[in-house]
Amino acid sequence: MYETSASINEPNRFYLTMTLSNTSAGPLQVALKINGTLNMKVVQPQGGVNVSVPSRSSTLSSMTLLVTTLASQKVDGALSYNGGPSQKVSFAFGCSTFMVPVKLDRDQFQNLLTSNTTPMSLASTVIKVSDSDTLRTTAELLATALNIAIIDTVGQAVCLYGSSIQKHPVCVLIKQKTTGSMSVDIKCTDGSISGGLSSEAKEFFVARNSAPSLLD
Image 1 (cartoon, rainbow, N blue to C red):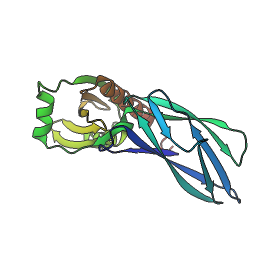
Image 2: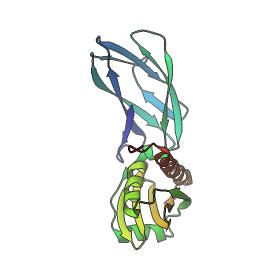
Image 3: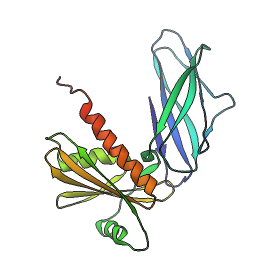
């Protein structure tokens, strides 16, 4: 299992934290090497990271990754245990990896949307939700999925906002269309980010809707 974190004060880096679990009776030596790409460099010791995990416990291991262009990407690596053969592992980083939730008031949000000096690219999608999901509940799920913040509720719409680590503003508007269906409009000064976040939003709710219910 792994998580990522980023800061608006560090425009070209983010952090990868992995949870390494050992369920065996003896210690486990884990070796991991992640391959960089043209757009992403991994800060790691020569030969990768080696971590010792005590028996029946978990250990956190962190890495720093340097990135140039904020685009969805996947990196591969090699993982081995106790000196055994390596197996391929992959890490997927969506545009939300590089997002940071930022609070604005309603006027600031509206001014950003209507400004002629800050041209923004629009990406739109329609998401399917449970009939019992409210607009607010869906907005909260979306905020968590995309690493953005809820700003305000205006009529039958919820406004959300965030910034990329490279200071690209991202404005999101989610509206109820019909029962079980909502529209998501995402505007950003970088069209690849708005498009990437729109795809992530749709994929997140598709995966959520297909997950088995705890009542099944």
